[in-house]
Image (cartoon, rainbow, N blue to C red; front, side, top):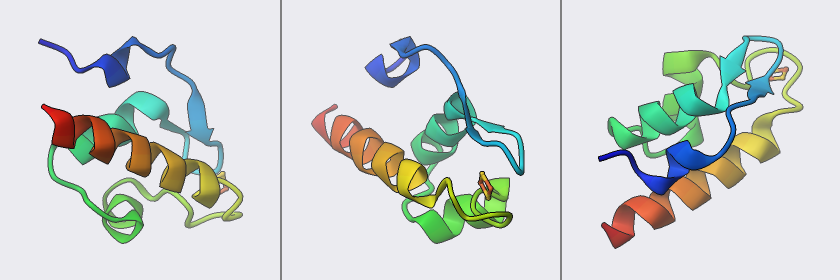
Length: 69
Ligand code: FES
């Protein structure tokens, strides 16, 4: 069963590295717990850095929803 996180429409979060919302959620579900880990695995935030706040927000929401499972 897919988590409710996947019900959001997918969108491009990091335009520099072309990382989609769904890729970030997937990485978090697969165990990434910090911005650092997401940045290393997906490259988010390694360009202009303007997506960092957005990624942090997704991380927070995803972790909250994963904890509830
Ligand atoms: S949009 Fe993510 S680093 Fe520029």
